[in-house]
Image 1: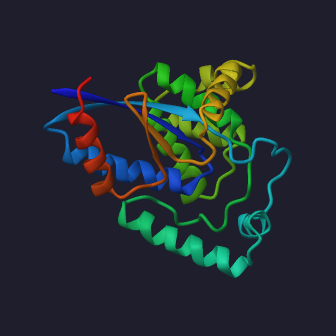
Image 2 (image 1 turned 90 degrees about the vertical axis):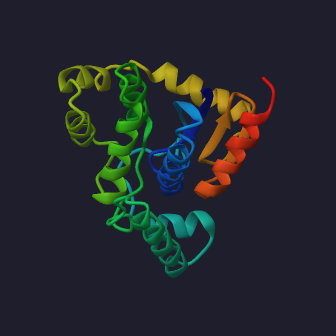
Length: 215
């Protein structure tokens, strides 16, 4: 069986990253008899300079993209429909606030050492889009850790220190220097870039083409 390795560059605050992974899961399921998939998550921050209390998401996005709040609400409504069809919980995505995701990325790195990086990422997506929780808040982060059966005390130690901070910063720098400026981005076998939350069939076709190429 052939192996396809995928590096996923994404942010917890990015709804298309959650949708993109759910579509990727469907594509991987379709190809499970032909390929084994190795996944590695990498950090990207949409709001790296964010600090202090967040602001409601709709006015924040309207200002960022120079559009009206009504337009942003319509866009988010579409995303909520797409997410629901994929089995994702986006129920409160319009009630969330902007927030910093650096600490959440540190916990994803730690969870990777425990074989739970994807589960951690999904728990954080659910907290942010499904429950409108502040994923920069330590209690929220520790609740995600506990939900996966990971060690809350160890996670608190990490959050109270700067462990994994350099790992996250190096990760971000690596992919920025490689030209990744928007997420999600999927780097397949270290050399093929697939940008955006592509449909499962598109991904299947891309993986089959890549898999057919000589090593």
